[in-house]
Image 1: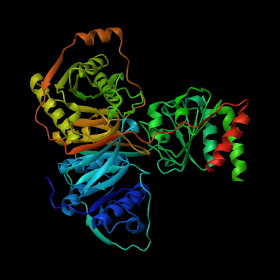
Image 2: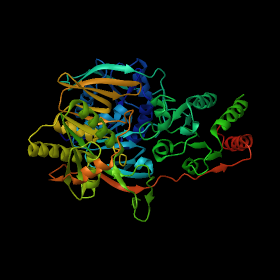
Image 3: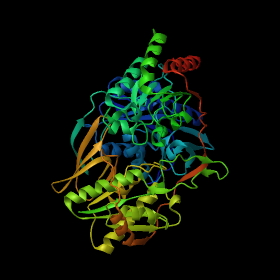
Image 4: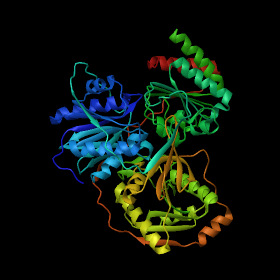
Length: 325
Length: 258
């Protein structure tokens, strides 16, 4: 099915614990700017169990209208159907979602249903001659592509941290409530298992202290956690540290983990394999501690300390405590 | 159990690919081609599934003759048969185009070998363009169930139980076969080839399939460029750790990090 006479920007508002995830609020700010320039509206589409404040949060972040669809819990097939149905009836020119695990599953389904394409992990959106230009990272972000989608709606998943939130508490908007369509399910969810007690929010962290194989042992990895705590940051890790079970995989930064953009990233005992660096290269300020002075992590670090991380971290903890005191 | 594994040949992801301003393209000269890392996990998961349930693994890819090398490598680490959808222009295909070509290849192999595939394994994304869409679109073409970010697949009743990795743990899903899974890194590594398995792989044929009609790409690349280069900063090599930390703290304070 292809759509004609499309207008407005629709943002899929993914929820976590009943509230829109941070990336959605960032996307709404960009959608607002783009829509204002086109004289169009921003529509937020929300599905599932939302808290009462969720609608207000979406409107204040930039939406003119919130479509709230009630569902009986999460199922990717139901959500894909909700998205497709709403796109079909609202005919947006642009459909955006956060590039989260499920955002990246749902956007291709929308693109395929309307014979259009989906730009992935978008870092920037600009409008040029009436078309949306998306900046997409390739090869782990070492090369960038600017692309346009020539069929409407243009669909894109946007990487967390690409835009800044712009909350306007005075903004008013409309709320439309709908119920979920009946879907003939192809898969059944038998069980949802929480293995990780703590929630780890690497994507939204301002400070990340990460450790790699150079930390040497699970006991030494505790130093990374301690430094993170002193800095008020979140703990990150490389794949080897995860595979040695020093820390759960929810902390992984890089190719098979998270892409992060903190203000400060402290890499402890991390050599700097491209699979890891591609996940943290967007950090504002990078500090690296590694005893191998040829470690590639130093090529991207603002400050590099060539020394044993196990000796350096306790000293760093003391020095930071002193500053913060 | 008949298993199809879809693979893509990509530039080695352990090499940092930079932007080549002279060629206005990614600098790929001298970079070895490998099987996409996530596809190697998919093949390993398929091989383990076959070892417990029996059956045959067919591996398929799209591209020119150079891709036969990637397929040979798969034949040495668990695949029984290999097919190549022959095209000189694979990079011009959209995610939808790749999905359609794979769906056509699946049908052609099923006809040629008089069988039906029960499971289709893909990597969750490729390490080059990482669009993470092909498996989802392939399932749509086949009107089959799909589960993404898969870390385990087990036979259960008439179908399969599939573990999907999530932020907090996993979802256990059940699907009827045929079904498509896109594989995330499980907690094991792909097997290595042996001299014997490499020799055997070399002798196996790689069947060619003709490229059919696919949807034209609706995505145009306007510009290829490199991100703003990160300058390497100050590397501190001091007499003592105390001295190094003092110097580092001075730089960080100056940069107003704290």
